[in-house]
Length: 271
Image (tube, rainbow, N blue to C red; front, side, top):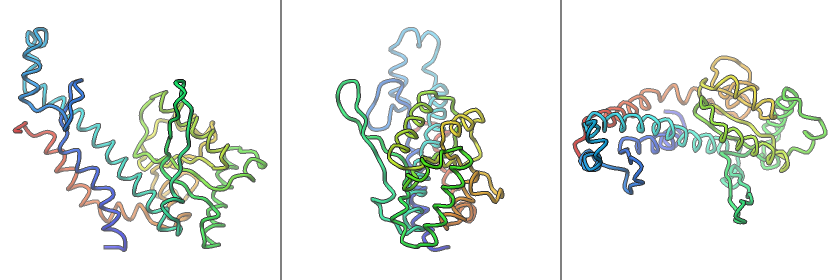
């Protein structure tokens, strides 16, 4: 096992394990992870309409559990990989936890303030290794050129902030608008915004829109040999860590954990 593998593995696996305990809430906002099969049946049998249609059927519960659990699996993989990505930036570029963390405040209509966090940051002046600093800056320059960022604007940029996703298939306009606002805030704070997608699953329209809004976007393409479009080439050639190799050599462990989670989600409810 390679150096740091055990630590990095735990970052990804810990959130995934939570999925096995998923129980649907059925709009009740139940604390403690949702309703058991028995609680679900009590709820549905007390509702005349649902009871007439036989929706208290255990198979209906299983369907809800599986559907919500699948969403949870994707979400938790994303959370784990976000933590991994940020930690790799820190370790590989000699940064601190504070260096790789970035947030900003927005003023709500109510007058209250809300703090928004992005998934990673690389401030150029914090990279002590000159060669790594110049290499990272050169990647930023090439990315900005591809995006058509004005040279004067680029000259003000002091680093990059990252939004990390396991995939991006949703057409959720609210999420897109929030990301576009994040990009504008990043530029006003002198950072190049970059969306790092770990899978190859990203909607083509979203990809075009983000790049039009001056987001650098790298996706889970393997073998492209281009750090301007591939997350794995960026990590290997610019950050200095072979993330694809990490995922590949630990694939059996990831597969076993997902298999365990899916069996728990699809098994008949016994609790």
